[in-house]
Length: 204
Image (cartoon, rainbow, N blue to C red; front, side, top):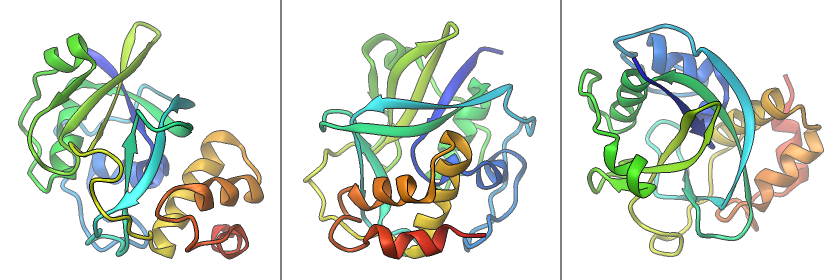
């Protein structure tokens, strides 16, 4: 089975939250139970990474309330993320769960690997992006088919920012201030959440 790096820029940066996608279960603070992947094995490896582009918040999350995180590779900036080395089958099952579909349907990755981008449908996380390669494995993520500015920005909820923040802290070894500054700078969170408001949410 071929391996890919799944690059998460949102709440799946939090390893325990991501484990619910793999093995099934409900993340702390969320209100949805995930069925899990056909292959419930742990990632072969995980590491922090950064890519060009910017994360922004839009639409309404039924799991967390508030805006969801989306990625636009064409925006200036740097996105800090976490990469998990998993099988193509696991990546397909994660994509399906993001779109509220049951796991079990494999994805054809040939287009995204050839062209760098493939839109599988009009759903919010059905556009695949080939970001780069690492250790001979493709680095893939998914986002919306639209671009930044096509949808109104929606401020993320406190629990959602806490989940993202804990993922960044554990992945990149940042301080609370660095983490809060980054989250507060993202479109949708900016001008709504200040770093000083975010820092207390990142505690134990």
